[in-house]
Amino acid sequence: MKYILSIFIWLIGGFGYLFIFTSILILNLFFSKKFLYKYLSVTSRIILRIIFIRTKVIFEEPIDKNKTYIFMPNHVSMFDVLIASAYFPVNMNAIEAHTHFKWFLYGRVIKIFGQIPINRTNARESLKSFEIAKERLKTRSIIVFPEGTRSKDGKMRSFKKLPFKFAKDAGYDIVPVGFIGIDKIAPEESIWITPAKLKLIFGKQISPDQAKKLSADELKDNVRNEVERILKQYK
Image (cartoon, rainbow, N blue to C red):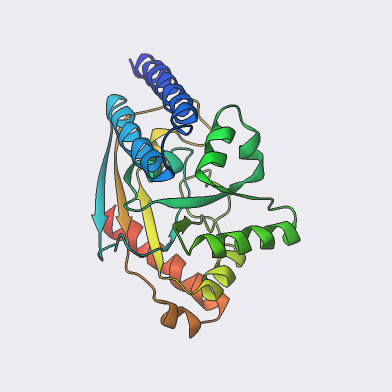
């Protein structure tokens, strides 16, 4: 039964997102980016519900939709970006691996939304990506996964230092975010998908003034500790 359900989820989810991404390519010819963000959010929620994935969203502090933020979540699954697209309260861009932009259909769609490619094997190119992100913060929020890549066992990997140099220099509120339960949907080593109830928690914000008083390493430890607290408190 588990495998039949997983196949059903792959089929429905696959066709669903194929429809969403294809329709975005068409809608982009006629509608604004603001409309496309809303369309992606609503349709993603519908698909997630159809494949039996429920998400509870918790805000420890209010998110002002008229401001832009730097969101820093843990990274445990390929579903992280989909959940973020569906449930984050503001329009945002993600810093994504440059290889994603070569993927069929998905690569074209993330270009439309203005996602920022990063080549983590090249320090100079990585710095350029964060400079683009800094400029982008003037108009929309940025999501950065400070672990860089997904965890294979559900436990947080070490945080990279560069995102925190960027966050200090950028001068915007930092929001630690906790994804709970997503690793149970599709473990890194498995092709099978299991329905699950998830939690998405937006933690206590770190102001630019607070960030400036800390070194990049101290800020990194501060955010990591906050994400760990969220995961323990709400698990």
